[in-house]
Image (cartoon, rainbow, N blue to C red; front, top):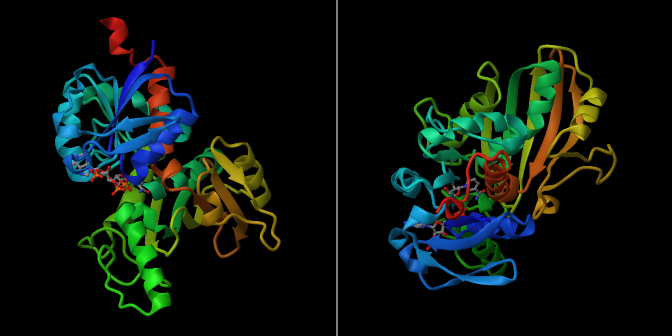
Length: 344
Ligand SMILES: NC(=O)c1ccc[n+]([C@@H]2O[C@H](COP(=O)([O-])OP(=O)(O)OC[C@H]3O[C@@H](n4cnc5c(N)ncnc54)[C@H](OP(=O)(O)O)[C@@H]3O)[C@@H](O)[C@H]2O)c1
């Protein structure tokens, strides 16, 4: 007997990817329900070789649904996740609304799958920010061997991280440059076509952005509260795939060769590091792939026990939809939830 799954935000970038990944991985679902806002009621989305009619979330009764994969932004999650959880349906949420709540596990299965056991306090599990997810997949195996003291990350984040409107803005602005049309930034604060913007999410009192703060708060929550992290988050004119330049200082000695060998064996990681023309990963190539790619592994001679890495992954997959489905798989494979239908 399989599970009944609801996708909230099924018409969005992440929601569509979730439907694809559930189908690709043969998730044990008897029924999958596509939900979005009232605006999308009656439209259709694909699920494997089937087509699902989208229903309005606000009219849907979650009482006989087992798992809700939610990807509809922070305000929807803040209001709806506790209501859905109270109906006995476990919510796995992609927004930042619940990530820092002490009673909500924040999970990347390759990093801290065991922390999932706390989920039943609120019936909510949080999925991390896209930049953090790929970062911790690369850091965890190195931390286990050489103990990380400090990380300096600069991100190069694709526009799909800002949703489908942001992708449209890059497309339209790029076209406008070629046909000499005026460019009016809408979702982004400045022109994104043929430009980079050192600003993602809102500014905080200390001058950092919320996106930068998320990377450090989430790395500490999932990996180790003692690790010091500092981040500069930058939006780049790439459609899909986030890249990160990562400088790491370790407690213990670790060479580039050792790091390469550790990462080659690590879950979720793929090392592409040929140190020759084209022998590294770019975000364009990562789109549609599941792995976190690690390239340009070098020793940093300016600090004791330092390494530099280039980390690339599809932000809609490992950064969001894939990780969410992997969390649902942990719930199922560890027998932490049973289909309600079986109990009825
Ligand atoms: N994109 C990424 O890389 C990424 C990574 C990690 C986390 N996330 C998070 O995932 C969430 C969605 O991102 P996205 O990129 O998929 O955005 P998106 O493409 O803009 O899609 C948003 C989805 O939310 C739905 N929605 C909006 N308001 C709703 C409401 N009141 N009730 C029900 N559904 C509603 C939309 O439905 P309509 O089509 O009906 O408006 C749409 O399906 C955000 O919280 C984002 O921060 C994104």
